[in-house]
Length: 380
Image (tube, rainbow, N blue to C red; front, top):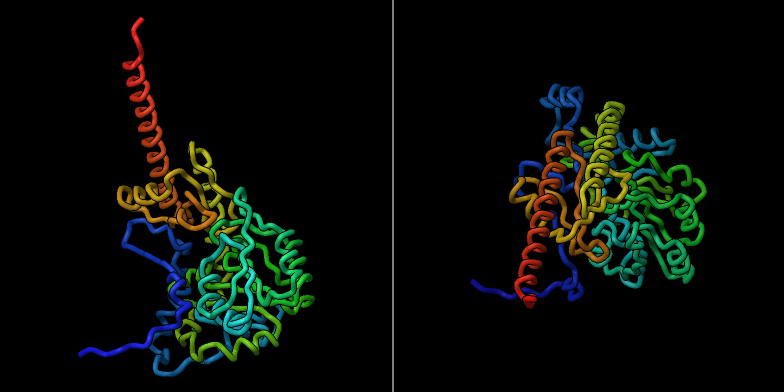
């Protein structure tokens, strides 16, 4: 049986789907996940209460209990909090409410790809102000000058920036908030590792929105729970475009248990920070490798022929990292998530061996070229 299908929106032809390949691999250091599972105490509570859990009931549409806990911890009211199906859904909700046809997003690439993808899906115009190639710092003057034109409706700043790992100066973020009435979304997905937040500035800047997630520091990447902190008027507008029941009942419950016992995650977070510094130090010792400072749970590094290195790590060492080498501004760059201590050692050992093999091959090529040149020289 054949039939006809009306084509989708023509402008979607230019949108590339977000690529999240996750092949089965011995060491997965590609997705910025927490290498630790939930603490045993939390798991025990879940197992103990699971037989009584009401899977047959719809979830609370607004995740009221979780909102109240988050608000209390941040010195806010529940009306200042919105819970979503991971940070991704909340970013999309912001684009739906503040973007759309005739609206403009100011983006600071290289950064998280979903900002640009969601903008295009919602027919939002994207204006890019690229970061500097040397250290991925924002071009503060260019950003403020662009905001001065007055046509920007929304700004998204990843803080620390994914995938580069750097923090932008707090003074710059404040200048952005002062320079525009556009909604300014500060993505603090890696806040627990950077220990820096714009939360103290919310009272003075009603256009500030802060995004956080349970996926990274709190080991709940598989549950998909994120939240926004914002002025109550902003939250009200976002509730108009969000999907009902988007955060399932089980995820709300587990996230509530995790948030209540979040002090248990402090030691693992400190361990990840220590391991991050060890990975940075290990990569810095390798010739031909440039590792960029990070305030998150990953490290971006540059190495010649990065695509070939990525394939070598995967096929010859069973290690998966993120290949960003084809992204504008990230040429020859790979990103490695911070895993367990053993996984990090295995990754560094593989990189050391790869670099050594490449240096050896390069030396042999030079010697071979020199020999060929000698044969061609005239005899005295």
